[in-house]
Every structure is written in structure tokens, then in C-alpha cells.
Amino acid sequence: MKAQNGTSIGPRAPFEYQKSESNDAQLISDPKSAIVLRKIFWLASNGTGVTAIVRYLNEKEIPIPIQYARSNGLAGNYEDGSVDWNSRSVKYIRTNRTYTGMLVQGKERRAVAATHELLVDVATFDSIQKSFRVKTFNITTNIQATPQIFKQQVIF
Image (cartoon, rainbow, N blue to C red; front, side, top):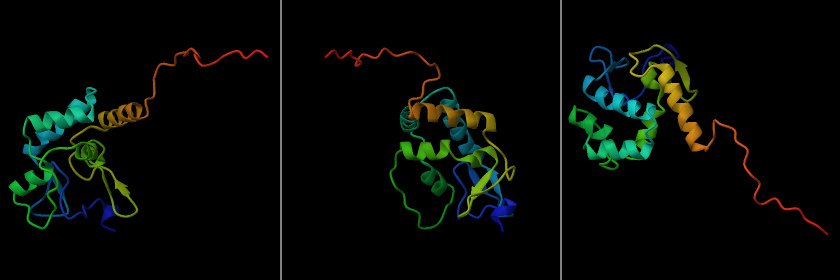
């Protein structure tokens, strides 16, 4: 029922958000980590690949999300994982619709729009996802005739 109403049901807020002190089911923007998140999306929207984004974040020694959360008082038994950014964490951030102001949660993956402040507009987010699919599947947007170099005429 909470997920249908757009109430955050997760144990902790996604990177760049924090739970409101007055209502822990409400997500509010964290201004410090917003800079990192916006940089990730800016790089992605300008065609920077996941590996290059990971390299940038590690070279700038930007704390990974769990380190950042712990430095801001996150308590609990959460696994640290690696101390460096990796492609999995960047892909997760880059494909997480939460940053468009939408919550997608629960077993049924219920989606509720406009539940909290959006940090990436929907058009930019969708453009990044489309670009990622094109790169992943090596889809060309220009159809070109390719010579059939293996086609032979067989004469008997």
C-alpha cells in the first residue's frame, strides 16, 4: 500500500537522497552528493561511457555511495564492497529512475511519479538510456549497405 502511494519503503535512501528527519518515508535531495550525481548524468548525456565515468570518479577520489552515507551517519550492518567506483555502481545510478522523481519499488515494481524532487529531467534520462542501448547492442542509426565479402558465386 505504501509503495502505491509513493512512500519510500527502502531501508535507506538512494545515493544523492536522504530520508527526511520529520518523515523517514520521504526522500529529500542531499545537496553535497547532488553535485556528483549531476556530473555522472552530465558525462553520460555527453556520450561518456561507463568505464570513463568510473575512471573520472576514482581519479577525483570521490567517495563511493556507501562511504558517503557512512560519513553522514548511516548506521547498520551494510557491506562495504570495494572502496573504488566500478561499472556496476555507475550503471545502477545511471539507470535508476528515482532520479527523475519517480519511485519504482516493491516486488511488483510499482512506479509512482512525482514523489520527490527530480534531479535529472525525464527527457535527458530517457536519452541516456537510449544511447546506452544503442552502444550495448552496437546498433547503428545510419543504415549502410555492407559489401558481402564472403558471398561467392559457386560454379559447377
